[in-house]
Image (tube, rainbow, N blue to C red; front, side, top):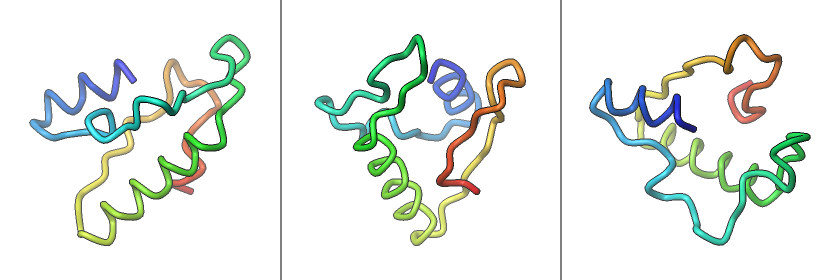
Length: 74
């Protein structure tokens, strides 16, 4: 999310951080990247809402070429 925050600032845009529910953790385990299903649902809903409103979405890629990305953007 640090990369997203930086890109958002550079592009003078907002990101999901300001809307993210405080009680929803992104991961059950950051070390093993075990994703929280509620977080994925919120992410998908947020992206769908932005697309319905014709927002531009920027894919900044994965960190250090890691083979992970949002399933919501596939």
